[in-house]
Amino acid sequence: MKFLTTLTVVLFSTFCFAQASLPNVQLKDLQGKAVNLSDYNSKENPVIVSFWATWCAPCIKELKTFSKHYKQWQDEFGTELIAVSTDDAKTKNRVKSQVKGAGWQYTVLMDDNHELKRALNVANIPYTLILHKGKVVYVHSGYTPGIETEIYKKLQSLSK
Image (cartoon, rainbow, N blue to C red):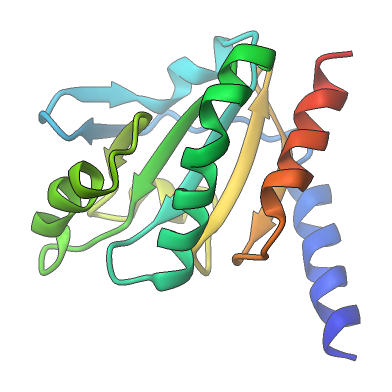
């Protein structure tokens, strides 16, 4: 029963976001530079957006997994990965050290006011979406071992 409920939620979420794009929201990178998320809507190659926080163990597992495969995704599909931290004022000072310690080589943005999270109706993290040619084409909530294979297959299908 739990599986059916989860499947229904995932399918409904995917359907709801199938034609959505990233909203016009400004976040800051780790150097404090403003980045407008809607700029990614004009990208031709896939963009993976992963919401996470330093206190979220499943998020860290997911991003470590993504880190292992990111170079391959870049080389094969021109994929860009954006990790959006939802850490609040109490924990956002841990983000830089987490990123540096993990050696993540992708873009990390700060959503400490949860503006993007609210705009996309993200209820729980980790939450991952794939944007392709301005449209959200994939949504996954939670961490599932093997998600990298699912994402790889989606990236393959987008490259055809």
